[in-house]
Image (cartoon, rainbow over all chains, first blue to last red; front, side, top):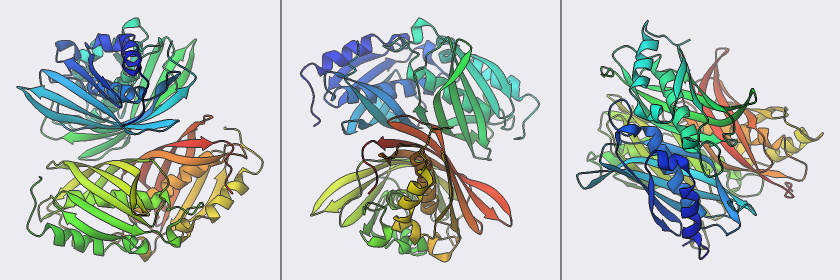
Length: 146
Length: 146
Length: 146
Length: 146
């Protein structure tokens, strides 16, 4: 398991709370563990695409954020993180009552952290994988958020 | 230039109008040409991340959509399009009064279309490149939207 | 586990045997299971980059092939496969006596198959992850190899 | 145009000359300009895949290298470069007498450089685009090659 500071969860939650865009789509962050986070979004009309599924862009937003916060959970107190790039495959329509994005650190590093995220649609109690992401995160040392 | 049907722009605009998620972030589609579209989003508080820039997820949403609609503009009337995957590099903070995503078809195909998108932040009349995307789109023949 | 034909391993091995480029780098295919393959390459001088590690391009070749053959192992007899695209993160120098690429099917589909591959460097009996790949494969029905 | 040192071309050529893997596939580096390089590979039997085209892995090798050397051409004398990741779309079979990979810097940066590469197959005097790559390069300051 990657190293982490005592207050990693508080720092991650504080950052998430400042993101208006996460509020806009009704996202929450129910899980923050070292090298692992979950972001949830209920299905609601405002985030739909033309067929009534959740928009792929919203799927991308929570995959990117869940993995980015997984990376942030393992950096030093005085560091922040930036998404360098990510690649996402959309595997199935985001069809369900709720989306769950699970981000995890695959390979921690001092300057770069490689992560993955999976996004599941929860429908009638069943999770279905709808997106898979691989991401590169940059660590900004000496640049804590706020 | 890729081939296109007479009503390509009307079909693209009709699809865009049905995407609640584009409305949610205040996106518009001012340009639809064969193999090329533009999506604009004004900077407003609801789409910000924790530093007051536009959230990378929103940058991703409009890059994905601009390139996807560029692909839709060159498919037959009875076809729709799906994003298979995309890869995006975030090059600079989305800092400006407005974001402009330009999507274009790089290589049209019967089943798969490869596209690219660039997202620029417009600040004091200057455009700055803030994201670069490469994307694969699948064409669904015989499955027109609606 | 994905479905597969009785002769899947024979078809995969026959295709691999025809690839001169795999021979050129001294690659072998010691494992073919449904939805999973392994390609091995010994470290030798001819495939090195300027620092004496195995060239990243060779790492990419075997990741792409291992995952592509994982996909081929689950398609019908009359179908072949094509790499549409892949994305690879290079995590560490390919430093060891041998490289092992493990490809697997993540999500089978009729037209598209999504796969992943990991490449490990084996050094003094220890495996170290040196590359991570996410890939999209297209299934060509009615176009068996040969 | 990105900044570059007086000896950028000599440093790039010296690095290329040390890559046994480039020699193995018969690659040459006929062009090195600031932020731009070309790698050529003649079609020969040793680099073929099972259908007689050039192996996609070889296409990937020269795309990765052409773009990586484009990045190296714009870094300081005391710096070297590493491929962090790349994403490649294979657009057409590599069918021709010769492959030409053109790499270019899209966005230089102190720590990270974003590049693109295109690979063309030259057949009967006509170039056909067969691959498109987007790549992230890391600059290692104070770690010149050799």
